Image (cartoon, rainbow, N blue to C red; front, side, top):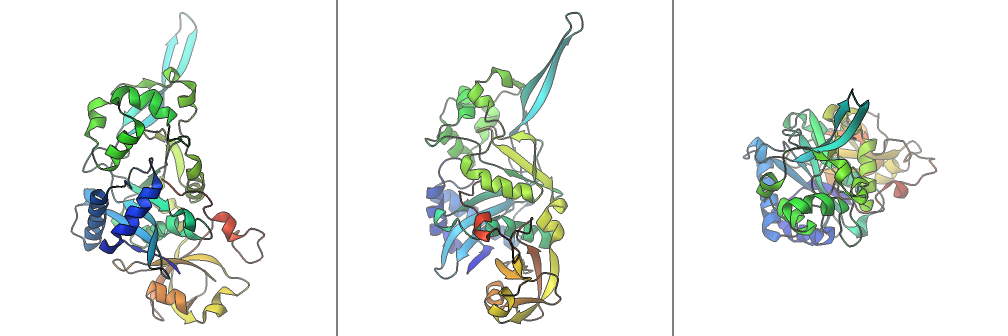
Amino acid sequence: MMIIRPVEYRDLGDILALAGKAGAGLTSLPSNEQVLAARIDRSVRTWQGIVARGEQGYLFVLEDSERGKVVGVSAIEVAVGLKEPWYNFRVGTLVHASTALNVYNAVPTLYLSNDHTGLSELCTLFLDPQYRHGTNGQLLVKARLMFMATFRAHFGQRVLAEMRGYCDEQGHSPFWANLGQRFFSIDFAQADYLSGTGNKAFIAELMPKHPLYVDFLAPEARAVIGRVHPQTEPARALLESEGLGYRGYIDIFDGGPTLEAEIDHIRTVRDSRQATARIAADGDVGSRQDAAWCLLANEDYQGFRAVACRCVIGQEPLEIGVDTAAALGLSPGQPLRAATLYADGRSRAGSTASHHQTGFTHAALC
C-alpha cells in the first residue's frame, strides 16, 4: 500500500536517490547529502515543537509499504521569508504618457518583491518516475492539504506554490539566459543549486532593485514568463483544480509562475470532513457501486498517515477496510478526516475516465 507519513532520519538514503533523479529546477531538493540531512532534521524538530516559526517545515514521504521504500516527497513551509528574505518578481505595469504628443504606453515590468513574506508554501514535490501512475500523484500532492485542514492552527491564512519554470531538454532556461545570467554571471544550474542549499545572499547583493522592462528581454524569454516546465504541467493543473491560481508573481531564476490561494478556500481543505472509523472487510468497502476514490487521513499530529482508497464518504461512521485501518493506525471508533480525491468526480463508479488517466503521467515537480 502507498502511505504518506512524516519523514524520518532513516529516509535519507532514499531521498538522496530521489534528489538525483529530480535534476536542476527543484531547488528545495538538491542532490546534497548534508543539506538533505539538515532538511530532515528540521522537519523532525518541527513535529517535535522545538523550532521557531520562521524555520518550521514539514517534509512528507510517500512510502511503498510492501517494499519499505520512499518513492516520493512533498513538503510545507509554515511561513516563508521570516528567517531569510523571500524573493520573486511581481509582474506589473508602468505607464509612460504624454498629453502633448498624444502618446500612452503601458509597459510590462518586473519588480523584485518580498510580498509573500509570512505565507505558507507547498513545495518540494517529486515522485519517482516508476510510480507516476494511478492515484500516487494525487495522494502526494493532496495529503499535505489534509494535514493543513486537520491542524489548521499551525498555518496562516494564505498558501503559495512556486512552480518549476520552463527549460529545454538540455536544461537551458531562456528566462535565466536573458535576465538572471546578466546580473549574476553564473550558469542556471549553479544559481539554482546555491539557492536550493540556502545560499541566497547573492540575490540581494546582485539583483537590481529598480523595475525591469519586459520588452527589453529577448522574445524567447518573454514567451516563458509564467510558463511551467512541460513535466510540471500535471502538478499545476492539479493545484489549480484545488483553487490555487496565478496572481502575477514569478520565480526570479526561471520565470515559473507562483500559484496562491486562501487556505480555507482550497477544495480539499474546505470540503474535507471528520468522521469516525468503522472497520469492514476490504472487499465489502471498495466494491460498492457508490464507492469513489477518496483521501483518508488520521488525526494524529506526530503519527500522521494518509492513504488513497475507495470508500463511501457521507456515511457515519465511515466504513474503511482492514488494510486501510492498519495503514492509518486506526481502531474502530477513532476519528479520521476524509475528502474525495478528485475535484470533478471522474473517479466515481460508472465514470468513463480511469483514475490512471488522472494521476501524474509526467514528472511532479514544483
